[in-house]
Amino acid sequence: MRLWSLLSLPTTFPYWRSDGKEIFRDTGQTLQHTFVPEGTAERSFLEVYIANTEGEALQRVEIETTSGGWLSYMAFTGLNLSPSDPLTLAYDGRHRLTIRAGTGDARGFRTAVSSDDLLLVPGQANTVRIVADRKCLVSLMAPGIYR
Image (cartoon, rainbow, N blue to C red):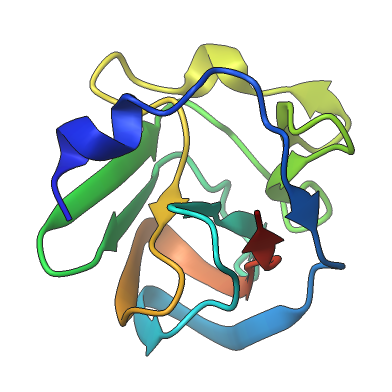
């Protein structure tokens, strides 16, 4: 699937969204997982929970999704997250992305080369790769998106 075809979809989100379910959970500094998301829509969206598991502050996180070719990428710098302050990327009922570092808004830590969303292609193998500057607990969720 070409990136331009994903971006040419309508800006509204008139789809049904299933409850999110955890698809991957592991601890490490560099993690990769391949899975096939549920759904019948042209795209789905990755939700992420990353918690620092080391004593020193977590400063940098990179998240990349691919499916047959590059789909999306987000990088965060200057986070300064302790183990009690996770980085979370989640969507609400109106499909608005919220990015939090602990209890605060973390959109300002996202780099300029970052994508607007972390895209997935339902029904196809998608690989998610996460690289952090500290060992982290990572949980990935991919709610099914149905048209």
